[in-house]
Length: 74
Image (tube, rainbow, N blue to C red; front, side, top):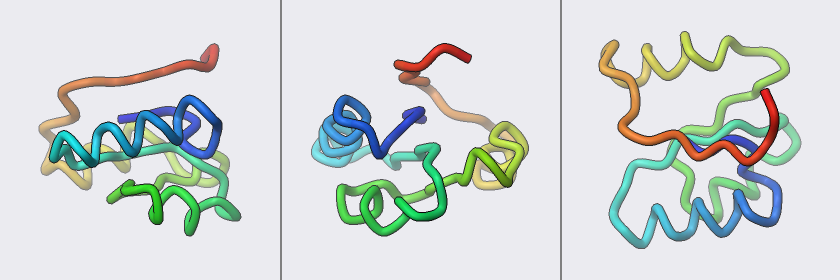
């Protein structure tokens, strides 16, 4: 899970995760969906319109993620 995937650091983190063979989730505004998906994000979550935790649990059959990379203050 990478917060702010459309940012500079987040974008690099998405690409690194993809190269490592990880299923990359990221938060992003709707307008940046195509960008983060082109970088390798499998699941893009619109943080303005969706409950991020709920969406992660739905996408992972309630298992959650193994790692969270957050470069923004909550």
